[in-house]
Length: 639
Image (cartoon, rainbow, N blue to C red; front, side, top):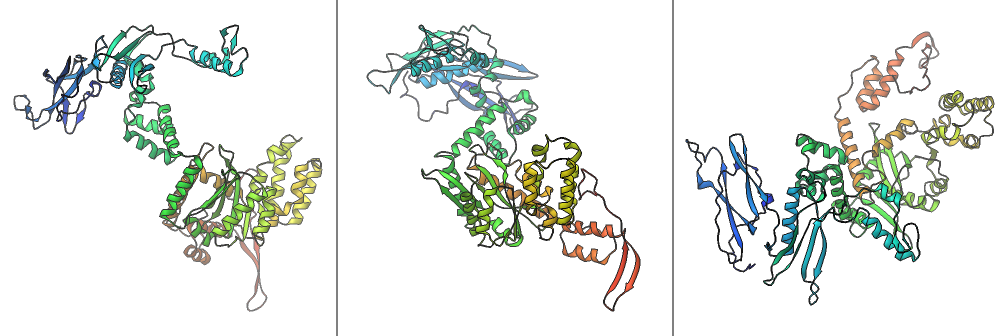
């Protein structure tokens, strides 16, 4: 087949599979006439089929229903050996034409083997089976030149072909026989593995074979079209390659945009299915979208996950010089620890850095790196992200490095108080790096361990609520110790080592010891749960290293939106009539004013029983008040 005689101004060649009926602008595009013109272009047995498409709109239809050919668009289809023919389908009063691909025949000639593969796959998709290129033969004189190729139905070969191939590899590597290797010349496979894995293989013989002919063109020498299994055009959707063709660049962009905003892939697929009037009209599956996301994530990791992470930091720092990040490498040059703080977090720390919570219990990623975070509280009572770190070890050396780097980022201004979990490895580094900072344990981490540590004790259901009451409702340390001793004695818990250790260091976590300090409400259970909700939907165990800073920025942006929404919130109406309530409404944010308003509303239940003037500036009141009791299982914040 010659190619040198083609005119340089020839219109683009379009494959038959792409010539479907589509909507174009305000008109309806369909084929109502087809003129076939045979032109000699210098190729032997090659015909140039010209198909005229007519776009029918309001401007090209005459009053008698005739079309104006002045707007006709001529599209050329290059067809080897008349492989394109037309099938007419009548829908309503409109006549539409769908182009189909003719089945392969001996003697068909193509320019290259890639054209044969594209043509055979179009034919296979039309019929309903997949294609595999199983063998290619190169020239002995020029090994880079291919001279023959075989394509087969994807169901070729035995069902256990993969297992037999793997068994050969194992037998060759082991050099000994076994149940899954070579035994007395026979190859055996793992029957259990075979039972778990399904296979399309059924020794189908459908295939085509092509090789270079004397003229240097590719010619079909063998064509076998019969299959030993059922084929149906509807089964083309079961072939991944055909489905993936429908994931266009536009679909990929929408997919990645939604995915990077934290939308699950299954929900993205559901939204796309809704746009197409149901899942049955979807050309691709959830698994196909997952594959596209996987490829995009791998592309970002070229050179390594840690390298991609550093590149993201450099990109962010180019836009904002106040972004802080630091990393440590081990002896072999691998990433060991990394810490980063956004510029907005550094500014927020100047105003809301009095109390900080350092938490390492939220997540451990797939590399077994704990995800640590510094968290504060803003003037709306919202969780405030002040920095994040991925650490390789939870030891004194690592924590000391994290605390020093974070403190240097915050201009060496330590917080007034810090809450952590019970990790013993934190105590010495905190004492060395922040000697004047009050260090206490987060009560949420301790109380959440009660079912695990005490669940097997006798009469657990009887004393668990009483234990919580001793912890939360003791007003002074002395009252706490008295009630604790009484509970331990009554339920015979003297031998429990966990409770004994907690009691010895009760000053680190019991509320009666901590109420003399300012904690911004962070010592409560709700605050730590809020920290965990802060990251939910953004990071998980499968989050890659380079994605953590990006997800961090997304979570930070979401918190910024929440803060702006709270700033715009209108003030509440007064309920008590006290002057102090009106004063606090002008001074406080809405969320903080609610706390004051709750106390003002409770003051309405107080009544003065006695008034005694002690001096000109001192008056003694005897007040009668109601006692507010929090029932077991309820929260103090409940109305």
